[in-house]
Image 1: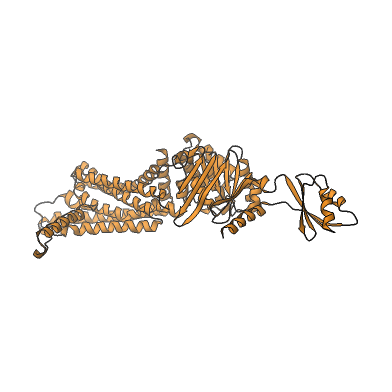
Image 2: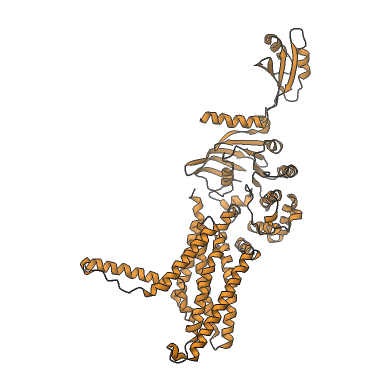
Length: 309
Length: 276
């Protein structure tokens, strides 16, 4: 649905995005992560046709953005960061205007606006002036205007920034519910959010892709790891751990600590306790060590930094 | 077409849901009303004793009252105009809504024509005020209605031309204030040129020592400069038309003026493709 290859954007002497390539398939929810100034917003602005790329190709729904901007814009709903809007307009009037410029048939405008307001929980706010909306409702308005016209691709730039916890949960659920019929590219700083909502993650740093994979693969794939702390000679402990049926790998971490890797879903803790209950060694502790997205993120960003400097 | 109208409607609704619209229209109504009364009183004074004012017989109403009044209204539109046009595109940019506008499936022409139409809508609202004055003239004098209609048409052309200039400046500026000040400066320069341009000498004498070729060159460029100073100001082309004289060259001037500045507005909006 979204196809980007060799995308580069240069602002004067600053290269915001450098040779970026990725694909997003239909119906996927992609988390677009990166530290501040990594080029997330720039990439999104290029994909929505707001800023042209310096070089490279970006396609949405098979249409080249430079050659068919209108076709692309018809298929993309965009929620910019900070949600700009016309302060003096009523919420419903603003959304009706959006429906008109997005080419929603005249007869369907009312229904479409009602649907978008209901989905985003704006029902009670229809007759409020945009300027007077709280931050949370303004974010919802941004999402509602993106949803108008039911575009197959949604590009959301930090949709949950500045919301209270309850609103964040609502918006997350809403985004999740969009999945089968919409393709969503979502940028955010909140990593747990990505864990909850996204199927696949693209981490960019300094305008380049630092990591991209499914959530599953990034956070350890099919294996689970435990950190075992035991007293005794390591030469006796390691073989004992390796002998356990489901254990695939044992690493010595030093200081009496060992990493034990087993397939996901198999609990080997009981077996470890049994294996290490002898006279030559004694088990002191077992701790689950899941790789979180946070680890992946920090690793990806730090590795790149080290490489550059 | 529908998108163009939607853009236009939104612009007009912003104009009329904030005090700006009412302040602008109110100011225009007050000043134009005052101008109408004053030119009328002046005309009455002259008709009472034409000889005292250097006229033989009753002077011409079109020439002495309608044309100066309409040209004054044109100047007034241009004086207030920057307040209208400065918001058109520069405000979208300063509010950040340009990001929405340019990511909706809108063509540049739909945005530009929508905005321009909205500015013309406001001009038309001002013209209705003028039309009230014209009705008074029509009712109490024997001036042909066609003259009044045509005078208003000329005023409309002049205002429309100025709006296209303002739209262009608004397309360049990042903040409405910059756009407003620039547009106002352009009107002011045009006003000064229009007022003093007529007094420029027809020939510019250069010292004999410079030789015939140099003198002819200076004469040639002076001629062009003088012609430009006299012909460029917007209000000059309205003076005769406001008296009911149809001048195709003046109409063409306004139409070309609008076309030229709309063209430049397109280029200015397109410049986002090559400007970083």
